[in-house]
Image (cartoon, rainbow, N blue to C red; front, side, top):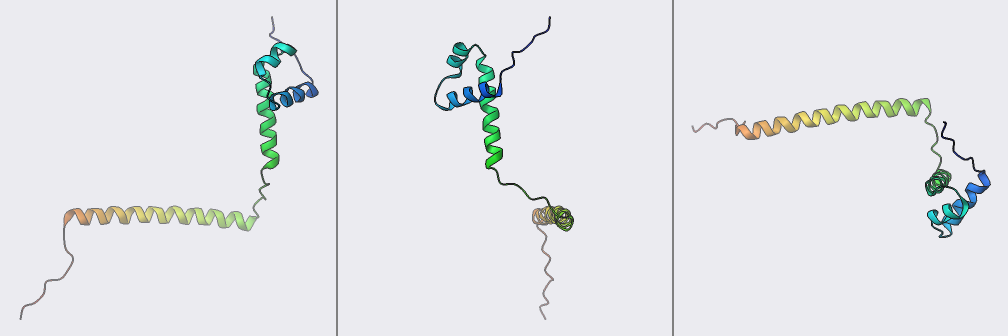
Amino acid sequence: MKNRTKAYSAQFREQMVELVKAGRVPAELAREFGCSANSILNWVNQAQGREKALKAPAQPALSGNERDELLRLRRENKQLQLERDILAKATAWFAAKGEKTSTPSSNS
């Protein structure tokens, strides 16, 4: 036997979402209208996702020059981080060794 789910109209789903926003509990609505509380929660989450998407500012696409510059800057940034890490390790190594790099003075 196939497990079939009951199809609800978009209007019904919107009404359930509005009732939840008005303060009704999904479990009570499920008992009252004969659908599952889980379905109602899913509809509410989907509606919230749509609202967030509408409120989010649209990100303009990068032009070819901007994309090239972004890639170049990312490569440069990675190279600089690598160089910084190497210098930090070298500094720690020399500090641990305790060697001084000054030249001896002459006492003439």
